[in-house]
Amino acid sequence: MSDNGVQLGGRFGYCQVCSRRFFVSRLRKRWDDLWVCPADWEIRNPQEYVRGVPDLLPQYPVLPSPGVEYSTYCTVQGRSAIPGFSVPGCMIPGFAPAFDPPTQVYG
Ligand SMILES: [Zn+2]
Image 1 (tube, rainbow, N blue to C red):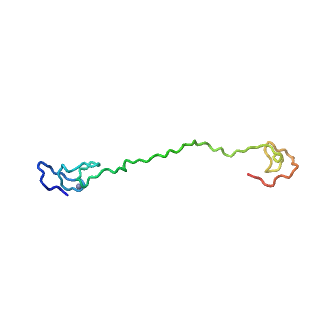
Image 2: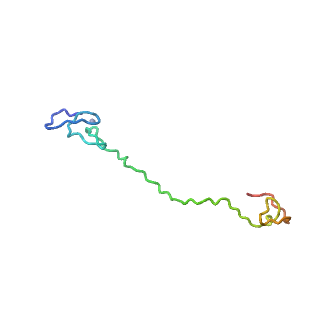
Image 3: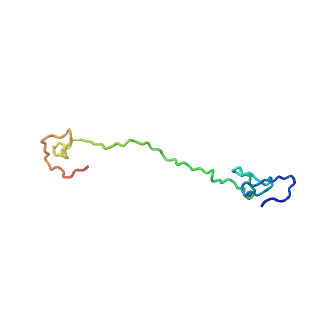
């Protein structure tokens, strides 16, 4: 809808979107710095100002892995010289416990 009517002293300008001729008094400057007609004028999208909310997660310290810990202590079976049951530093060569050693080894 261009203005072809008479407006005394009015100057003509062109909409920078649709390139139609309007009186300069009817053109408006849009958010993107374009001079546009009333039909092409629009507000800036308010969603452009929306920013994400950062997640405030607790920051736990990163601790080193303890790795595999071995605890050795002398047991009756560890004092024996039976492979798989003997404990280094505790084993007595030739020692045989007076009971049957366990038949299952854990670990
Ligand atoms: Zn226009």
